[in-house]
Length: 331
Image (tube, rainbow, N blue to C red; front, side):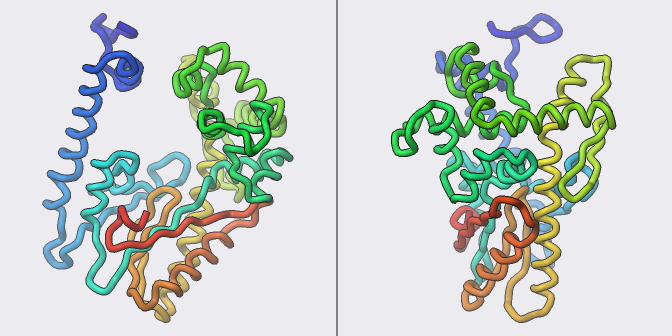
């Protein structure tokens, strides 16, 4: 038993079961059953009932003022949470198909929050990795573990990826230890080596937290304020959560601003009517379109150009594009 509930019962929360599943079969089966049950109740049972009788399609609603970071959020149904890392989630995505003689195109910003971190922190190491089109996780692994780029192992790259993404979400040494399977001491040493190699990141994080503590808000690159009502909370857990949010909110918020700017530019271009295509869906850093097969090359070029031009960062924005007859093929 790793943790108890408020009533003293053994906890079956997902993080607890995930840790137990490393050594025992039953917790793994329970997690798998929960995942399948959620897919069934949320998507496979409900989506067919939400097909519009007039269009034969499902129409989601996008909320602009729900997510604290400013990201659009999808409701009725929520199409932004369909898992992509599991075979079952991908099968749900395969149900979203294009019309005859049309294709789906998915355009996804690559590592946009890390690129924004490089721009905001002005850390020379991160700027160099992105500007020279290196594999940033491999470059981080080489720096942190003190090996040549071509000597980085798969395990070292996975650890560096966990650090790169984890730190911008305020991950602790304990969290990193659980994620990469090392002791808390080893994880702490790895994080310290990271900050030694990327001192600009630590400076940015410290200055951002200080600014949030002073003003009660942080800002995106474009000056949009993201308020942190719990930054001075008496409850330590709430206060620490707000401090973690203070680090990540400028990056998530800036990413939200960038894709909205791209969406407006792309829609204005599509409204000119020169190509047979339409924007269907936004999922965080991804835009999904339906396009006629003959106009696919034009849409690929036009979407990529407008997405990479949506902000002027000190590192390039990169967009990955895929196409297919269904959403899984396109992503």
